[in-house]
Length: 332
Length: 266
Image (tube, rainbow over all chains, first blue to last red; front, side, top):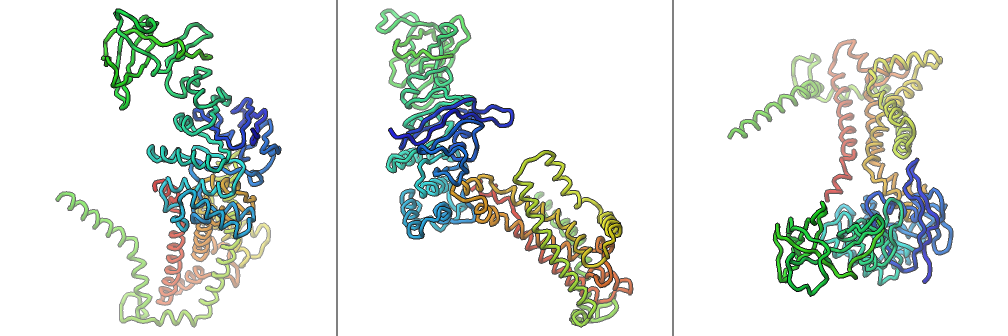
């Protein structure tokens, strides 16, 4: 696979604050890669370094095999979609989209052709003469994407582009964005702290924590085989069972099963733990059953589906069991 | 019912305040149209005092002086102030708060102190008093207002806009030319209008640093008053007042009214 972006030995300090101790990362051409992590983990800084808006303290950045580490942002063939869109308020939609082409001195006819294309692609044809202030959040977001796409950049950088939108709209735009990326075959580097967004859209997820890469893999693998306790906790929900200092078992709540304490004939593995149901919380498609384990302060959570034979209630005595293949050993 | 009573009381109170503020100005304006030479008696409506003004060579000279001094000091203070505001807004450096405070201080210093200190400065450096010293003095007190006005506009601007322009292949100069400057322009124009108004209006500081042949309108009005208040002064003051009010209204309209927060709500 052709390489598009390579970050090599990147470190970043703000003053005496070491934000990124050391990162190596290669991004392939046409890949949808997501940098996922809690706020302050360095994901946005990394994105801004690719754009040229921050300079790495040390290390090199290659774009399409060219060393662009010291290039100013306006000399890099990448475009960014900002978190608050950063649309120019004194220009209308069309002028906003034209800006990059104008600066690159693209011939006028070519400009118009490209603008018509992206307006069609982002369904903004009816809004070309509007000012950003006259658009809804979702429409503004589309303009921001169109303004970046029109330049046909080598890489599109997206900094939590859906963060300011409400849940329903975010869901729809997630699919739209993914389809757009697939259709154009463009390289997308997407920054988010929303694990659900990362799982649904990405070809590959880079989970970051405190300026380090915790895990770099496919969404499926990240979810089912988290490498560390942090990843298992940050992406989805997990129950942890400490076997000893070095070995921790992580089990997803949907893989954790509850049975009666005094069950006669076990047709499944024997319970590993026993405890008492402390709470059952309604979550729409599921109930979450919280169980306090005997002889410890630990509370685990399991999902209860509405077609389950038995519905659990608080204060019931239960056993906890799982299939061995559903337990993942993770680093502390 | 009770609420109704309250709101009408509040309305009456507001009217009283407005009357307190504007009655003197209103009376001045009215008497500028009074046919009688004596202020106290209303004898009929006339424009003659305004016409007399137009034929008064010394008034016209003072007006020319005022306009020239205001134009030059506005031009210079707007350019210097805008550059200062851009620098203050863009860069972070040591003692930024102190430097900011020093820039705002001239607004708070009593005018008489400012006038006196400028006079001392000019006489120490043996600069002859006249139009040049007036212009220098006016630039001094206009500068702070321009900086504050332009800075307010820049503060309301998202920092991301310039970065977005840079990301869209605009060089630093192009970013300034197409993004920063057009967005800051309403603030710059508002600052210039305030500077112009302040310069046209200024009496105290001008009184200290004016020389021969550099009498401005306010100084001329003061000189006229010493010979008794004539309807001609009323007319001149009315003209000055309405010119000032219109400039201030234009400046207010151009001032940023939390444009960014409004946008976020939408």
